Amino acid sequence: MTARLCFVDAGEAADLAAFLARLIHYDKAAAVRLQAAGDTLAVFGRPPSFEVLAIRTARLAKPYEHGLDTTLDVTVSAGEFLESVGEAARAEAAAGVAVVPGAVTGPPWAGVLPPRGGWRQEPGLPVPDAVRELVRVAVGEFRSRVEQLPAERRVRAELDRVGREIWSRTIGETQLPVRAAHAAQSLGFLRGDTLTLLSSGAWLRLRTAYGSVAVRRGGSPGLSVTPA
Image (cartoon, rainbow, N blue to C red):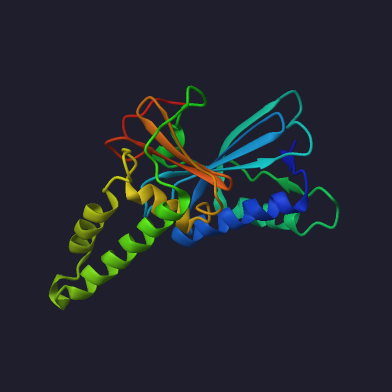
C-alpha cells in the first residue's frame, strides 16, 4: 500500500514545497527524512553549505495512517517528494494529498536527529531585526574579503577558511553560530517577529514561525550525536 499524506489545505503543501525547493537549490540530490505522527509531519534536511539541520513541519488534515501503521519514519529523495507535494499544493480540493516516495539509502546525518523533547529556552538572543542585520553584515564581509583576495588565492580552501572564521562567530550572548541564522535566512525561515533559541543536551535550535535550524554545539550535525 502506498503511503499518503493529506495536508490540512493546499497552502500548507505550498509552504512545504517552497522549503523543499530551497533545499534542492543547494543540493540537487538532497534527501529528506520524514516523520509523521498524528496530525503533524516533520521534514528534516541538511543544506550542505551551512552544516545545520533544517526542520519544517506541516499540518495534516487527519492523523497519519498506513494500514496498521500510525507513524511514518522514512528517508526519501527531496526531488521526488517535491513533485508529489507540488501536486498537492496545486490541488483544487481544500486538502491536497501527497504520495510518499520510496525509501532511499540516506546520508549519515539522516540516521541521527536532535532529541524530540527536553528543549528549554535559552537567553541572550538579540531581537529578530538585529539577527537579520547581523546576517546581512556577515554576508557583506564574506564577499568583501573574497574580492580582496588575489586571484591565485581564490581557491576553495581559502574560501572555506574565510567562511569558517565568519560563520563560526556566535550571536549575542549565546553559543549559536552565525551560520545557523544564515541558514535560516537562506531557507526562508528568518521572517516575522518571533525568534526563539532552545537547547536540549548538546543541541541548539533556532525556532521561528516558519521552521527551525538545529546545530550541535562545538561540531556539525551528524557527528557523534545521539540517535533520535
